Amino acid sequence: MTQQGIIAIGRMDGSAAVKAEDAFKLIYGEAFAEPPYNETADDVAAAFRRFPVQARNRTFRAVLARTSEGEPIGMAYGYPLGPDTVWWDELTEPVPDDMRREDGHRTFGLMEVAVRGPWRGQGVARRLHKTLLDGIGAERVLLNVHPAGKAASAAYRAWGYRKIGEARPWGGSADLHDVMLLDLRWRQSVNS
Image 1 (cartoon, rainbow, N blue to C red):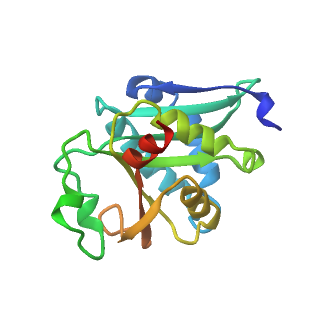
Image 2: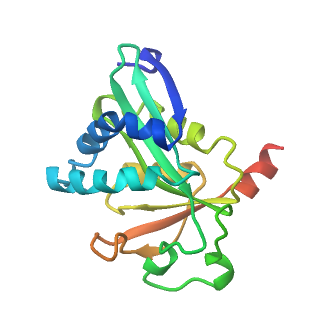
Image 3: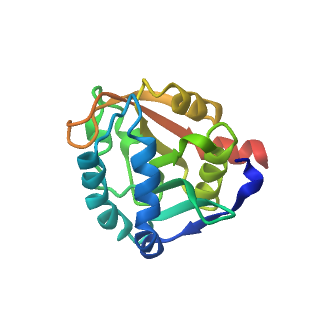
C-alpha cells in the first residue's frame, strides 16, 4: 500500500476521537504488540480505559489516517500540559524550574504516534505528526519514547526533537523511556 491509497489524515477533537475509538485501539494494539513494547490485550485495554478520560480534556486533539477503503492505518493524539502535570515529576533527574513550568498552553504533550506495520516507512507518521501539531500555538512538544524503539527515536530526532532526560511514565510502572522535547519557537523562526 502506498501513500496514494490514503484518503485523508483527519484532525478531530476529543468527542470525535472517542467515537472513532475502535480505529485508535486497532492501530495502537497492532503497533505496540511488537517489541520493544510487547503490549498485551490487557495493556491495550488499560490504555483505552484512559483514552476517554484524556479525550475529555477540552484541548485534546487527535489525527487518524485511513486508506481509500476506510481502513485505519495510523494515529496520533495529545493535549497541552496543565500546571498540575506529572510529566516532569517522572524524570529520573530533575530539570530546572523554568523548564518544567506549565500553564496549559506552553507545552503540547504528545501521547501517542503509531502506524500499522504495512504502512510504515512511507511518511505516514511524519504527516500525522505535522497535521496534529499544525496550529497548536504551543512553544514546544514533549513526549516519551522507549529507547529500544529505534525507528521511533530516529524519526523524532529527524523531526527536531532532542533528548532532555529519562523517565518511568505511568506512575513508574513502565520501562525507562527517553524524554524528548521539540522547540517550536526555533522551528517557527527558521520557517519565517
